Image (cartoon, rainbow, N blue to C red; front, side):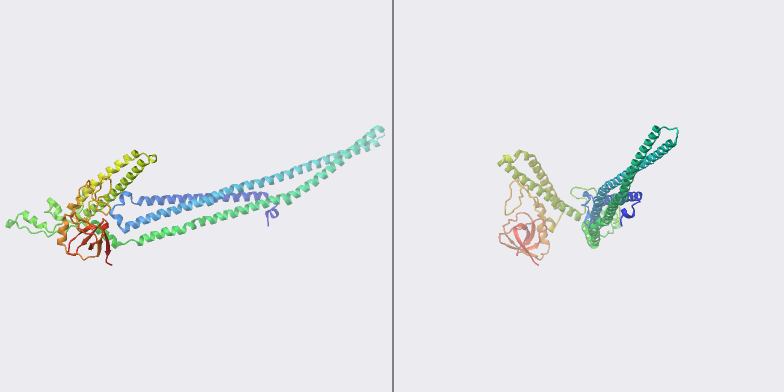
Length: 531
């Protein structure tokens, strides 16, 4: 069934229906646009929320950052940020695939509908014009026929009048004949106009308008199909990102399962263990026997503990939960308990070494670049590198000073065992490492070896401690003099027992068969650890 047959006389209804359909498309486009705005605002709020609760760069070094519960929370914030990205993708795809596409299609439909309605209007105007010609022809025929009848009656009356002359009768008859002829011509013209109008009317109602109505029907059906596709895209757009959203949610679940309360407790202990011993008993001071306070105070010297930190207030009770004033932060971390100070000094020393290595590499690169420029001037001006070379040299000197300073503080901290395996990092004037290695030797211009003070405690430690069972063996690839305190000499090819593995600072603790122990450069030996 089609509109041209069934709705041939419902032009106004068809015009109104097609207009209503286009308005529905516009309404749906506005609906989707508002939905995309909601998605974008939602995504923006999620991103701001994640950013608000994400740790700042300065706070990522806080002790709490190592806790699994804290790390899992950060993972959740990152997953929420990714989730927000998917909401933005939904908004973007809806805008591109629905709003923009439907808006463009809607403009095409409007233009097409306008063309069809103009064709219908033009056909209607042509039919009305033909009808007006028919009506005019009909009226003229009617008027001329009446004039012809009056002329015939006048001619008959004149012919019967005895007073009328023959000339008058002849004239009246000629006039009647002329009027009759004109009326006959009008009749023929009216008949022709009527035939023309009927033909055009049939063309209008059975061909022209049905064709236009059917085109409007096709337009409306295409509009319905297109908007239906838009409805489906509204769902499919979100379904498309559901797998990724699911992964974000799975990541949040995984973050929850990754929380390890036992490990967090161990981290808290490691980060906050002071290294102090519990305070000893307060001894009875018998003033009746004349015992002075000094001797009583000295009895508290062993074991050392928080009472020793009380200074002038050592005669007061030490309360575990007393409110403590915030300590003044010092560069050597002296405000921290021994255990925490040692860890912070070690970490600072490692950071300085890494930064120093970076500057040394930069210095070597600039030196090579300068050599290239000097050999090939067309590639660049060697003098242009001077500011960078000077700045790098200043940085190296500054870091050397800091390195020596912190190595001294590490020695003062009284660190024992594996915590004192830092070798003094010295550099020659060219920025290269001045450690003993198979590729180089000590530079005469290197900074003094401050590790002498650091390793001063090793000999006493090795004498007092019981021998540790070896964990493997190593074979010397190069000879090592072992000139520094705490190190041990070895000859190329010598086999030694490994007492302690390299902890990342380039030194391994070994023992000879005669019991001598010390540290050697890890890069000088091949190590085999027992399984």
